Amino acid sequence: MVALLGLFGVATVFVPVRGAIDHGDGGSSSHTVAVGQTTLQTVCPARMQLADTGSYGDAEYRSSEGDITGKTRFAAFGSLYDSSVTDISGDNKQKTASIDMSDSAKAFIHQSGADKKSSLHTTRLLETDKGSGAASAVASWATKGDLQGVSSTRCVTPQLTQSLLLPGTQTGWTQQLVLSNPSDKSTTVAIEAQGTRNGDSIPLATDSKVTVAANGETVVNLSAAAPSQQGLYVTLNSTTTAVAAVVRAVHAEGLVSRGSDFATPVGTPSESLMLPAVASGSDVTVEMFSEKAGNATLSWVTKSRTVKAKTVRLEANRVAVLSLGKAPSDAVAVSVTADVKMNATAMCVENGSDQSDFSLVQAADVQEVSAIALPEGIEALIDVVNTTDTKTTVTLTAYSQQGDQAGVKEITLNGRQAVVLAPKDVARNAVALTMSDTGKAVAWGAVVRNDAVSKAKAKGIAYIGSTSLMPTQASVRVNRSLNVVQ
Image (cartoon, rainbow, N blue to C red; front, side, top):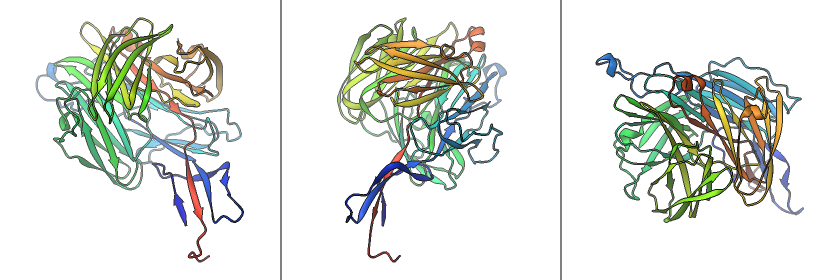
C-alpha cells in the first residue's frame, strides 16, 4: 500500500531525491521516500487586453488597444532534460534552441511575441536540485489608446487552490480573471470573494462556479461579479486539475487611461512581508488581508534606512486598504509586519498630465535560489532588499539570449539595507538573472518600463517578481501489507 503525503498541482513525474530514503529499522514494515517534481509547467498570460473593443458608436468614443505590443521571455536553469513552449492546448510548439544536457551551467532562453493567446512553458528536469527550474515573464506596452503604459508579470504555476488580492471594483475598473487549464481533463473552479465592507463572503452577481475546459481557458469578469468594492480577496478552488490564474486589471476615467497591470496569486500568509520594487515618487496604496483580526505596521524601506509609515487595524476576513502617499525619493520597498499571518500587495501609481499608469507589486517569496526573466523591449531596475537584521551576501548571475552565463556580481547588504541596480550592472547583455541567497534573507523584484512609452511622454510602470528555483518535493510512505498478493 502506498500513501501519498504531499500532492503537486500538475500531472508530473517523480524521482527519488538522492539520499532521501528513510529505511528505518531493519525489521520495520514501512519506509518513507522523498520524491521531487521533474516536470514543471508555467502559464504565461496573453498580452494585456481590454474586456470590450466593440466598434460601435462614434469613433472618438470607442475603446481601443492602440499600438499594443507584447513580448515573452522563457527561461529554464540547472539540470535540464527538455524545455518547450506551446499554446495552452499543447499544440503549435515553437521552435526553440536545443538543450546541452551535459552543461548545467547553461540556461534555456527563448523569446517570442505575446499575442491574444496564453503560452505554456513545460520543462523537464534531469534532477530535482537547487537552482533547477523555470522562470518566465511577459510584458506588453502601448504609446496610445486605452492601454497606454506598461504591463508585466512573471508566469504562473497551475494550482488546485490559490488566492488573489486585487484592486477595487468601483466604476472605471475592469478585472478579468483568466483561468487556464493545461491538462487534458476539464475542471470546475469555485470562486469565493471577500471585500472591504465586512468580513462576510460577497454574494457574487455571476456564477460562483465556472467550468474550465481541458486544454482551454475561461474568463470571469470580477468587476461584474463583485462590484463597488475598494479591494477584493478572491479564493479559487479547482475540483479536478490544477489551473493557472491571472487577472488583467484595467482602470479608466471616462476617456482617460489610468493604467493596467497583471495580478497573480499571493503566497503563503506570513507575519512579515516585503514588497520590493516600489517605484520612488509613486503614489502607493497597500492592500492587506488576514483570516484573523490583528494590527499591522507598514514601513518605507529606503537605500539607507527603514522608516515607519503607518499602522492599521486588520479585521478578520476583510480587505484593508491603506494609502501611504508618495514614496520617498530613495524608496525601494514597503515592509509589512503584523501580529497575525496576512497577505499584502501594493499598487504604485504614476500620474501624468492626461494619463497615468500603475504597477501591482506582490510580496516577495524569499528563497535560496530564484530567478527573474526580462522580456525583450523592457527596461528594468532590480530592487534588492535584506529582510533581516544580519549582514548577508548574495550572488547574481546574468544569462545572455544564447543561454550562456554572461556575468556574475556579488552584493553584500547590511541588515535591512536595500540597493538598486540595472541588469547591465551584472552583464551588458543580460536577459535573465538568478540569485543565490544561502541565508534566505533577500527579497528582490524588478520595476519595469519601456523606452517607447517614455519617449511618447506617457507614464508607464509595471512589476516582475522573482520565481523560486528550489525543488518541489513530497513524501511517499510505503507500507508492507500481507493483503497484497505479489
